[in-house]
Image (cartoon, one colour):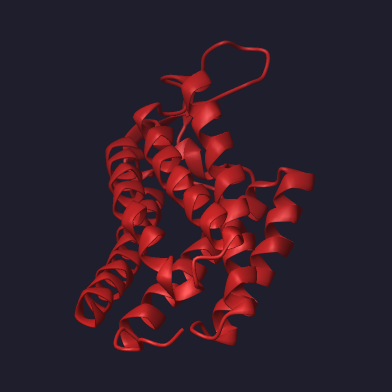
Length: 216
């Protein structure tokens, strides 16, 4: 049983690290490839479809992350996000034993799985191609990952397995996530992305390093 638990923890940690690497490389790589074509799509609230404009490159200040799901960056971004969501799914169930199987932890784990699936579907339905499907998937993702990180960070605080670093990143996430919810600013969305990456990466590294710990 101890060996099985160690294996589950190691696999969960590896998937956490790999998913963050794939997601970061594909999304930041999409920022670079966004400038490949001379034109890019530009959307307006009063138009039902985007119009082509001169491509001056991706701008973090006024463009949302998912805008890279269309145009020259579409393939790298969409495939990367779909794969990242799939890779992140097993991370959350592997944390159950480490958080003493509390009710809060269980809700957080279910929310994490839902968020991972929704993340993949947000690129199955890319922005501009299927705006309704993308909007629903993205909304479920942001709501679910917010619940997951808040509840799991609280469960980490109540437990002994995870470090204060994991908890601190969870607190930072709450701040940047609230900022994004209230402002809807693209910069705040990018902040949310980077904090999610840091939280998941820290969790994965911790699980790999402490995989042989049986008392939690």
